[in-house]
Image (cartoon, rainbow, N blue to C red; front, side, top):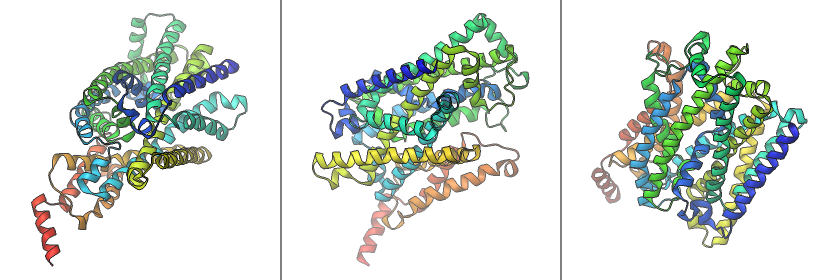
Length: 502
């Protein structure tokens, strides 16, 4: 099986580079950053499925069914609401301003301090979050595949990151849009084939498996339960829906990685068609993931597999590699690789765009296309090295506490982005130049307070546990702080005039 996996992996990489060769012909900086705004909306819509479903999601959503049943579906419904807001509010704003980086909006609205704050928050969030997600993919592959080949994890990491670096270097977002098409196909194919393999192995009908899910959850619970009615719990259905909505707004609508693909469409109309089509497909795919999770639990129950002490994100790989035969193992490997690659490749391009447009301002500092291209390529390589460095550091100090901390840092930084954009869009107030230094200070202090609040919420708030809704609290506090340091436009103009006269 190892030889077949290696041969198929080589074939997969060759396919990626064939797509790269086609999409990067006559590529320039606009090709890299915006895809020359010619990406077909239906290709973007389909490919974004792979981008939104990282390798962690590929493993954790099915596994989490064991402890949280089908309550994740509430989050999916929240996603739908969030994508409606993005399509109705944010996309028209970005297309109207004709931005390359979405954080250019913050610069135009509040000045350079807000522009830099937004881009740095995104950079930290995406670098840490995406690198960790890629590491967890590499770690699982290392344990189940590459250790058997006696390949060290640092070499696995270098090979994976180098492949992504090379196929995204020239074509940028244009290449990412089309390679994601391939990778989403492999991801969804892996999901469907695994369901078929499980059904064949157990020899029962789907109705039989569905009935078996009634006692397959933790402690014999019904894993088909969708609505958790305990408001204290972090999977309470209203928390899931509202939290899912704002997670989508913040981590898609205010995320350069995800929005760069949308902004590569030909027009606002196409971008909206892409967004709404993508939303429909995403709902179906997540239903399949939840169904797979329930089937894995029934399979474990009927085959005497003890998963009670197993981390939930190990349930899927453990069963795939040890109980579903060669077909199940190989399908899992390529689904996981596809999810990892499609999540990381867009990150390389988005981080490079953020550094070039938001921090270095290459369109103003470098006059020729050749100079801009040289800087962009250097930045792209440096981003890949930073990405690799995070992965290797985590691999040398792997423990659950470190992983939780990195994920926490990455998730908390989206709160200030939510607050900044909300304040800019829904108010006409302005922060005077003399107080704009407070914007980055607020962006650091508020997430710190939210972390403290979350850590002590059960003691301070009568047993209440924060879930996804903590992002909303984070954003609202930033919004309130900006209200406190800002003023009405007319008042600010009068104040500036007084300062000039004095």
